[in-house]
Image 1 (cartoon, helix red, strand yellow):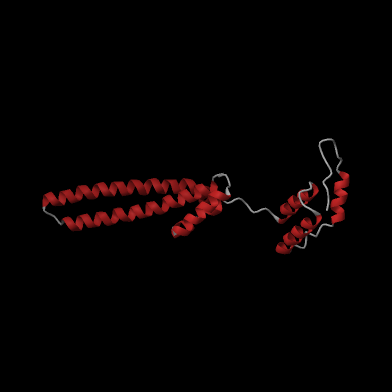
Image 2 (tube, helix red, strand yellow):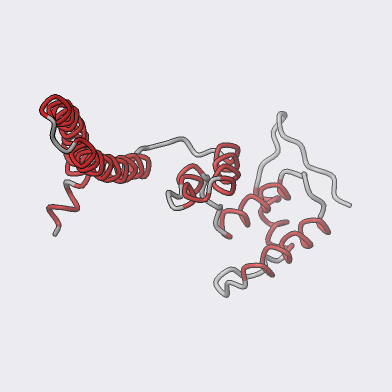
Length: 179
């Protein structure tokens, strides 16, 4: 089973090629058989219907394999993550429900930042002076309230002040004003 999983793209590509060639070949044979039935006085409708049904069946299988191949390629591809593209695909999937099964909006959606990453960004904004102490505490409470992760504890403002005092102020840096 590992061999099939490892060679999935190759197998899907081979299936697409074979079903496409089969559908084209069966369509050509159907046209020739129908013309032969017309000229020979045979059962034209039965001949045409049989080959048409077979060709349509192969085209349907070909479409299924093609969609599976495109989906596998999209999932495997290193595509740039963009919230704008993901939002557009999400709207398209809501309008065309069969596209939702492909999950393309998930492929293009950027990963959600972890709570630790958001906590670090919030702390960095506070240290750089973008947030006041009250804003920092309010946003930190909101962040920790939505996650409820016991490993992440509320960082004391004194720890932030200690971090601020450790950073050296040079002529390009400045000490942000606190409220």
